[in-house]
Length: 283
Image 1 (cartoon, rainbow, N blue to C red):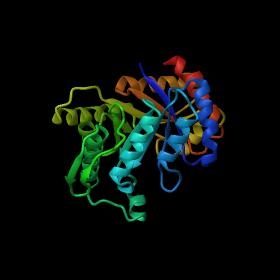
Image 2: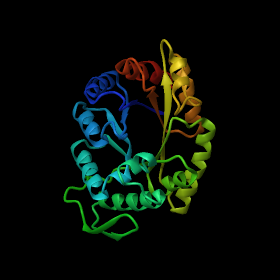
Image 3: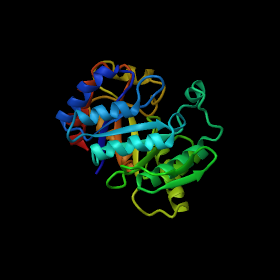
Image 4: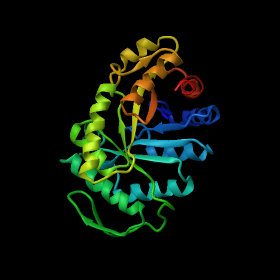
């Protein structure tokens, strides 16, 4: 069964978050995802507020750019969310947009190496282990969490290039793919993920989360066409049109489809209600 979510885009000011979160909770939406985009809004701050304002809604961060955050700090914050809001926080890691990383002096020469070292260390820390490692980027000396999660949470990673997508299968419990992902691209990504899982000797389930650029109502097609990120893979139309696009992604291998509004979505509260009340019953 396909899980459905929606995105709170950081192009909205932070004070708009509560209204969207409460609309999602009231409508019965399963997941709301937030982004840590430079230089808009921080992922941990927005996720923690969203979780505090709700009782049931799962909140995902897709993604935390790992060059920006020391792995010990990111793991401490992740563990805190999982202790306070068990089974409701979904944490994704990624390379970060390289131009943005360069702007803050954090660009890594080898983003793949950094993500590998980071995810391995973070997973060990979340499992309550004491970690010493001297990697190319991640360096920890006798570090352990005093308050690890009560159960080891899933760790997601997101990527676009084939090497990184394969790495997601190797190091993560789930993979997050952008709104530029068509069913054909998704099928190829699934193969790469499975290659990574096989290389790591993994046989447990691996969730694939795919964003779907979505617009409904007046001017929907024009808003999709104007969006550079996912215009070719996006969908404009009514609930039936959007549900059909969701099902095509599900057939290609998506476990969760997250409806991503355009940056100029005129009614973000209405968008999450549309996802929960209009699209979800059709999938």
